[in-house]
Image 1: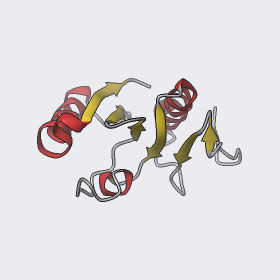
Image 2: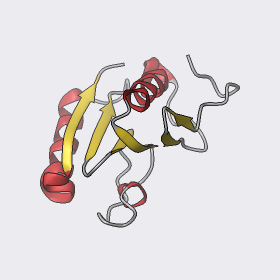
Image 3: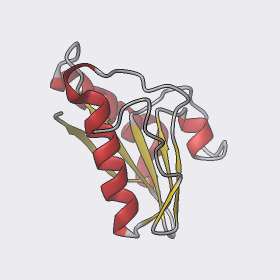
Length: 120
């Protein structure tokens, strides 16, 4: 879907998207799934900003201090965050479920509206 040669949109439906400088994993459909999910989220109109492979501290403007880099962080209109992890070929779903649970319980708390793991 989205290769390195194709420029990805920085704004969709008023939602600003912050892409990584380099896609981080093209194997197994991982990157294509991230791009597809990000574009769906932006088109929904539910988000102000979406961060792809960016540190939690960056996506929350320092409100939550962490260097963890989920695949996608959506900043909802109003308040709250959606955190999405896309399983890559080298990861197990259970491992990512634990990571999302850790982020909810130890970092985001009630600010995490939705946390999910999706398959490529």
